[in-house]
Image (cartoon, rainbow, N blue to C red; front, side):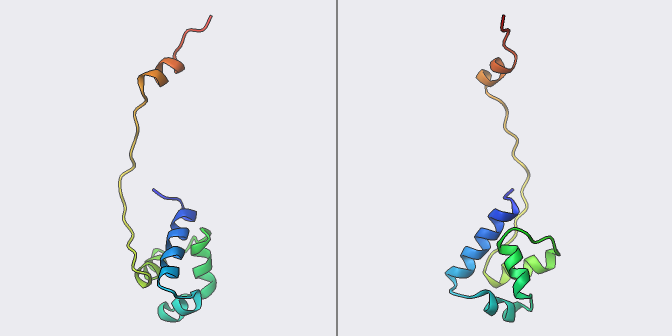
Length: 85
């Protein structure tokens, strides 16, 4: 899953692709401009409702996916358990 900064960057890019300012999105969604800035900068810790309204306004969706766990390669295992003299 992307971290908050990466999510904010994607939302900002989507807004700019629509050639809209934060002020315009604020007026459209009823979300305060400072909150939009927090979201775009990865510092937002508010409600999912607010995030969803912003995503809707810029044509994005929120997807939840399982974490992908990567199994170690054999050479990584050998390195971990090597018998150094």
